[in-house]
Image (tube, rainbow, N blue to C red; front, side):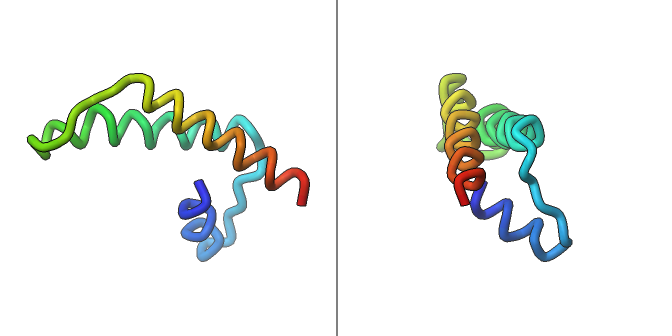
Length: 67
C-alpha cells in the first residue's frame, strides 16, 4: 500500500478512505495470486495471501489515521 501511495501521489490522488484501500488491496491480491501464476510457472496461488494484503491495507490505514 505504501508503494501505491507513492505512485498515486504523483497523480495527486490520495487514498485515505478504508473502503478504497480494501478494494485496492483485494484487487492487488487477486492479481498476484491468480493472474500472475498464469504467466509465471514458478509462482503458486494462496487465497490466504489475499487476506494478508487486506490486513496490511487496514494496518496502513490505521497508521495513516494516527498521523
